[in-house]
Amino acid sequence: MPPNKVGLSEVKRFYDSIRDRSDIKGMLESNPQNLLLVRLGMGCSLHGLSSILGTSYVNISEIERGKRKSISKTLLNRIVMNANPLPSFEEIEKNYEKITSLSTGGQRQTAKRAEKASYTESEMRLMRKLELLDIEFASHKTLKTSIGPVNVDFVIKTKPKPIIIEITDSTRRQKLESMSYRALKIKKALGNVLLVAVLRDSLTEALKRRLEDFDIVLRFSDIGDLEKRLQLTPHAAV
Image (cartoon, rainbow, N blue to C red; front, side):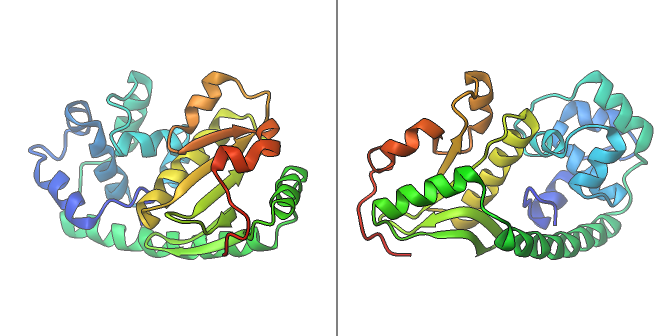
């Protein structure tokens, strides 16, 4: 499926709004979100198109979701060079279904690998803190959602909404953008959840802003104060 979870009816609406389906440049300049149509017309997943264009899949996803209001001249030229005129909607629909099927299968394999992955030192530190607080949790938990299986680092079922915690040692911009994008997908799929990111103390404020789709962003040094920061209470059940 298109990983940004745009429904087929929305794809059809975009398609019907295009007057000249051979003018790739024009349709992208008028509405950058039409990149989704171009991608589906090419039969590409987010990762597939990002490889062809030499950009990150997060960048493509943000354009398709309307988070970026324009496309750089360099990227626009690459798209125009590689894309063909839009095919019939029937062809786009077939590509949509094909990408949906492949994406779901890939998500299952990714979730299984994540379940078996060894714990990082940072994850172990967080686990010890939760155990000390007598907070029940699930780790490396695979959740069944409307966008397929999603594996998260920690789940704590609290009221009025469960807490999902993602923790990373990385300070790479692309990794953090990917985490934020995943957080957005989880919110769309699960609705009423509190999403928390835990990151290195050395993370700059500029990089921290990349995590705008999380509800709370903590640093490793905040783990010692976790119950106050997240308003956790002992004996929270999973």
